[in-house]
Amino acid sequence: MNIRFKTLFTLAVTHAYYGGPCVDLGFVLPSGSERLLAGGRMLAKISDGRLYVLFEADEGGAPLVSAAGRSLRIGLKLLNPAFPNFTVPVLDPAAGTPLYDNSGDPRHLGAPRAAALRDVEPELAREGVFGVVEVRIAADFYAAPAAFEIAFAAREEILRYYLVVKRYSDAEIAQLTVSDAGFNEEGRPEIKLTKVPAAGFAPDEIPPALLGGGGATVLLFRSQAPVARRRRGRRKIQLNRNGEVLIEHLPQPGAERPSSDLIVHLSKP
Image (cartoon, rainbow, N blue to C red; front, side, top):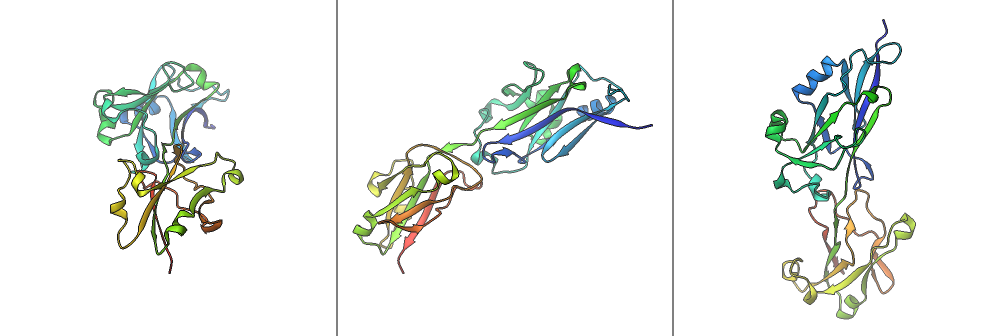
């Protein structure tokens, strides 16, 4: 006898920060879901960060056991502690745990709502999951599998380069600029930055006194608009002086950074 498994539905997590699939969240099945899988002759497999729920089918492709009308709960376990640094929150953390379901449209997950996880799924609450997905299995999934997706947005922040300069004259400092020479090449919007002297720093910016000292001059290059965080660095955001490129690729905020504030030191020998 041949055993056949077919896809019932898939669940993928994507993130604008990565420009595609996101593996920062893992999938956790509570015991109730494990029992539903076993009773419904189903399997759950993970491949390339995507969850596949499969069902055992007969020779004609029909399910041996139908779980139509039942709901399968899946926990989303946070695997990357830096995830909040570059992710737009889907809910106020104080409101509760995000719960995604397909109650509004059988083939799509709606916007998350806040849930008291201890009441909804105590087992997942003990796991400390980031969120919960509840998929109600529709009968037509067996003929045409559903493809669910949770898409996270990247945080957008003002990009700030704090420049700590030593052994440069006032005239040379006046010639310093930061420009985005890579936007055309990379096919993205240009990042325009404004030069701000120490006296013009905003109250929520790093005080120059904490960066300077020892005769250093501190100035700031601040983006004119918020910039989306992304894993792949933007090339050729560069520091120039009087037409000469001093630093071709300025650093970009990595995942471990909670903000887009970057400190760059510049000094002559």
